[in-house]
Image (cartoon, rainbow, N blue to C red; front, side, top):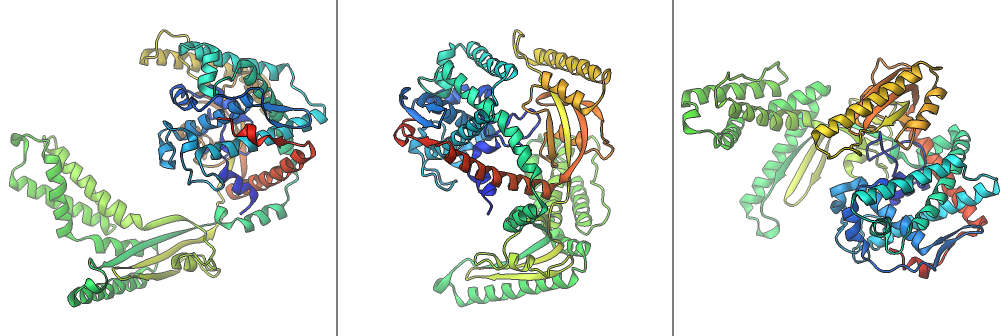
Length: 592
């Protein structure tokens, strides 16, 4: 596993961005350890942060980290630490508990089992904080050595961030001091936050050019070596799979001779069926047809109909319920519909007119179709099976067969896994052997105008509509301004840098699913051509779009990102040593 891959697994701070257009699983190619700090300013989770805050008093005078020309105090480290924590919660929302994180308890008291090298959740966030601070100091030291400093625009960005915090504090009934203490820890002041943002802004300024320089130096040999080192990241196979299972309810010596014999008989029957499917599966359609015919048991479908309809009929008054004759007719039509669908025959869902009980029949038909066709026959498609080393000791028999070097489309096999109480015979048909994702990514620029309700008396639907209309009008105005000008990418980028409310104007190598739906659909429209502009609405507001063109194939874009991440990590380590970046562990222990 490459260092870049390890980093993405173990450090949440590297994948936290200003996500005005992006989903939470953002995959653009800009390193974002710096942007994480800025994003935290706008996280609307004040209540959760207040609950989290009461973990101890920080000692401002202690130096947590330092380099030749910079230092990070305890209160500054508290800002970085809590900003990471809040960004983590902002990404996961209510799903944080699935990771074993209880936001109502101190982080030091909670075991962290999800990530290597972290005994508690405090350890996890502190590991990320230390890595982040190390990288920021390395960037700032190098920037200083090369004569790079913050300009008026950079300082204006920081002033705007502080202003936004102050406005948010007031809107929630806090002074700025109380707000910062609640969000970032006791003792954290405006001056501490400003110092953190200055470091972050300077580091980010240097990082952009550094990444471009490293990326320009990536060779095909680098890319191929990275793919070879991380095949599980890049290779997947597409299959059809159908499992036939024999079970025994009693294990070991307690099972009777009859139970043992019944189990052996069941195993023989299931294995014979699996072999029959293997023989019938001349292509993917034949595979699905065979499975559908096995599932097309009218008696079982009828039994399930009775159960489903009974659940729905509880909502009907006696006077609304159908006669036995009507019920039997509806049941027969639904069974016929499901059976035909299973066999791949053309079938239309039955209609029941305007009768009061029609919804019950329809609901039963939908549930039966889902169970038998969608989940049953069509559910045999198992695409995107992640590569596993066929020589690996822990690799399953199925993956050993599927990822063998000579595997090809159309191959079919029965994989048997037999046990004392359960035996499964899985028929695997290969629709596409191990392959890279050759989807062509897209490059796009956008200007986000968010539909904020700030300034309105309340936040009800009417005010939200007014805010949206105002944002749309602003977007229309900016697009018209662009069209009345040079109509070049540079002109669009310049306009975006002046007006966008997202962290980035340009997104490169965007894969399908990276962006929110409306944004994604626009850039992946087959009719899209270079230079296209439009306005798209998403839950974040109105986006003025500019289509730059096609990017790399998805696998290659990911490989380049991995190579750059590895080279960046080496660069950070080298510069941290050169500029004597060091941590005071006793002071580190007081943070959070």
